Image 1 (cartoon, rainbow, N blue to C red):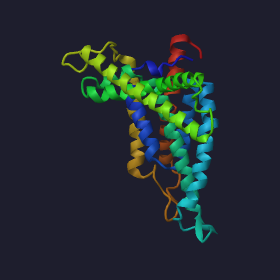
Image 2: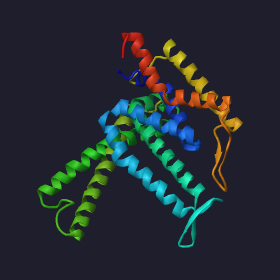
Image 3: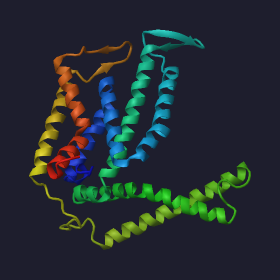
Length: 292
């Protein structure tokens, strides 16, 4: 399926990812956390296929398990004591909070990975190049440097291996010295590359008044309709925030509002918000091609 959501106006992409990442960070309600993680993971799989599945199984799942297990041993708050470990109470509230925090952290990482695919450097410069040109340039350079760092460190490592100075050659001390040399070379390359990029952008007149973007995005009727629907969903979720439907108290005891028709409406709106990119892709695929 074609990624129509990524072809929308950059403002829509930016508003969406800003809202969904903030909601994932601050809503600790277990239902909302589960919806966010599953929605983000589904969209990540749609964007990155097997790479996203491997990232989830190899990195995210073990990270969530470790975070959930460690928190009860570090946080002893809570009224429901399950058992004592070295005279330190292990509470039910700390266990549940550790699980929620692990899911929240994993959800934020997943949504950031999706954002990195959609919010390219040219979109960021288009949105913020005139308002905050320096910050937008730095941010776009950071996003661009992440994949380039991976490629460059492999190039440096292979070159050092050819002369017997690889990070896996020799004893532990030698490996550490070789690794530090590789890191030093990578840092030098990054600084020089950053200076070159900055000089190049300055020579092209970046940040000067009246300078236009190299790519023009049109805000058409399709974008207006999608943005209106997006605002409706975000507003509905915010109503749940102000009415307390999205909130939960973990300490000193668990306190959460019972499920009501209003809360079901809020959960449904949040589900649609998390599934928004996939829904947009599906609807536009049917509209333009008549099938999935």
